Image 1 (cartoon, helix red, strand yellow):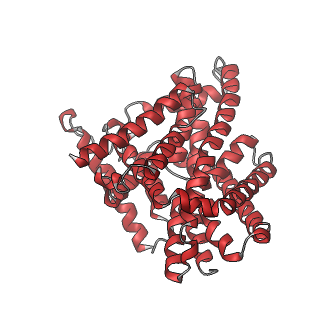
Image 2 (image 1 turned 30 degrees about the horizontal axis):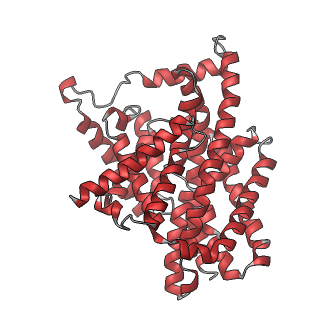
Image 3 (image 1 turned 60 degrees about the vertical axis):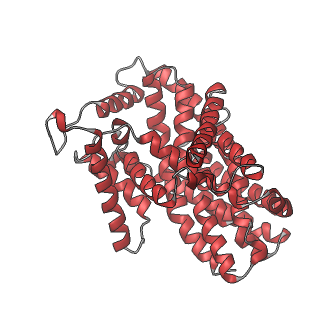
Length: 396
């Protein structure tokens, strides 16, 4: 019965998060509320192993992450993917802004090893945090072992609501444009909605089997094949390009050539199941610290988070106009470095869903915002973070 109780607790936490988000129209993002619930739970009565007890193990997460990234690829096209180079540049230069302020000004307040241990999670979320934690253990620097994960916990609490506010402002700005253009058949807004609608229609697949064979497992098996191929290519290239990025790109290609349908895992009715499992695993990282540990390093955490986010803000503020983005959108792209996928996807889709008045408006908002957030997150968390964390490990 323990495993069922653990599963129920996780689902209730996720449910409360979604309800609060819906009630506040995404002013308070669901993942922020759920993260708070998990943190309070771990710090009080919740067992540290509640997530693996519910069957959400590292193996499950490896499968879920790969399948979901291929799924994200089926929502985009190659042309749209390559058009997001501006979002990549802003996200990466936002990371540069973070490094510049934290390493220069941060070093005036704290010793060098403290700054080196704390900064990478600001540029790559949990991936960098775990890399630094293992590196500190290997180097025997036990006094700082808790710092990277604690930094991840605290900056997530700030990053989720801040990003949600920025995306909401961007969404409201775009809704004004959409409502002005929706009655003009030649406008950009109408063309975007039409493109979205055409991609939703039944596309011609390479494997055109009779209807009785078009089952959910047929979709899942094809998505799994693409995910397997992407991970295999990642191994062959020694992860020069992160396997997560390859999953996304291969998902786009498989969709373009007709091997996968649009929104494949939703059609197979397993998207939410995989997403909830992945979120549960991410929230399980909140069990790695305690109030006592955070209490001892709260000053370092707060100062470095503020410096890091300020660096992102300055970079995005300067670059927004030259790159043709609003300052809110540019800053949100930079902030993806704090968490990456799947939080960037969830925050974006929640905001688009809650402020749109009809499906066409939601489609327009999603098409305008989501690709930038996804690509920005992959550029920082999946690529830059690994490089930065690896370099910083040598500086300890």
